[in-house]
Length: 454
Image (cartoon, rainbow, N blue to C red; front, side, top):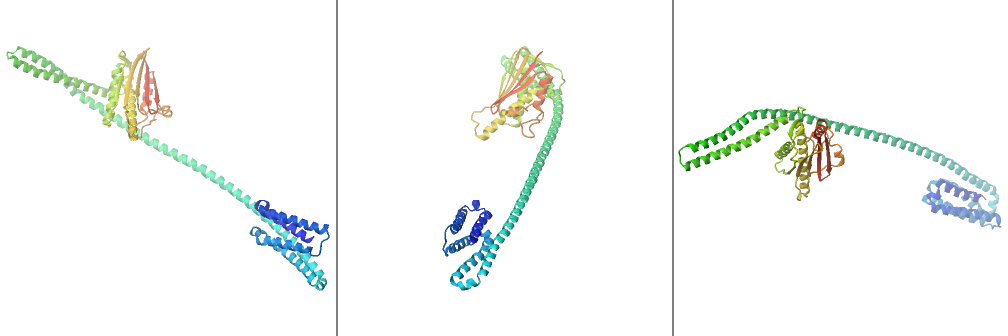
């Protein structure tokens, strides 16, 4: 009975302490077999008559269990418990050996052997109880440590989250500050540029005024010189010289008259340019005037084109006009409408130049030809103006913001973001009209102006 209790509880202790069913499933099956063998041995002992040597089966069985538990590395955590069984097994084996080999000696000291066996038996359970208690204490300490680690981990994760959140806030604030600084720099550059342009406008007006007087003299004297050539030709006919000399003199006079006519023509052209410069440099009077819309649009189209050509000598674009000849003069604010034309044409030429540059860099220029077109039409009391280009076009997100102040798609320093905003105000507020845009990204852009004509 003692062997059964020792073997049964030892096996149960090993299985519960090491959780062999999950951590050591192979050994768990072996321990279950050992438990069943222990039960079978105790059942055999009580059910049938067992010979004297039956106890040696228990000795072999216990020695085998101790050997496995003590020598296998998987059971190293419970070796101290295994050692507690050794005295009980050793005393039992020695007692059985002396009973067979020295029966007289065994009979004399039988009581002492029984006491020693009982003491070793009790010692096994005392050690197991103490080990079990220690194991529970260690398990509790382990659970407490795990809870502390979990709490520490949760606190660490919370702190990391707070740090990450604060870092994101600081990063966002940094980006906002950087953007604000960039906006301030851009605004400062725009103000400086606006001041320069204002000074340039004043300088242009002064230069134009200074050129106006000598230009008037050139135009006036060239016209007078043409009249003098005609009078000189008439006087030559009155003189008594040979026809051959008359023809020679008349040829010279004709050449001189033709030169004067060319001077007059180009002088008037220069005069119109100077007047245009003066008109553009002046602030709008806010009053409408009768203006030839087709001529105004054509003039500003070529002015914008040659302005871009002055910056980029290699730039070329087809200028296409489709004017309604029946429009005639229309009551508009010429300076303001001229600014609108200049902004739209400048943007159109920039778009086609940018598309040509991009296609050239990509090696896909092929047969692309930059083209800017303007068309006018008078219908049902409204003036319709369309400015179309086959440039880069605009995506929807840019189209939605194109008329907002300070919004520009051009690189820093190349655009103030005020041109289209100002143009929108001029058309919608000053002329009670409409300014809209239709675009296909990568293909074309069309600005549509509609002005009611009273």
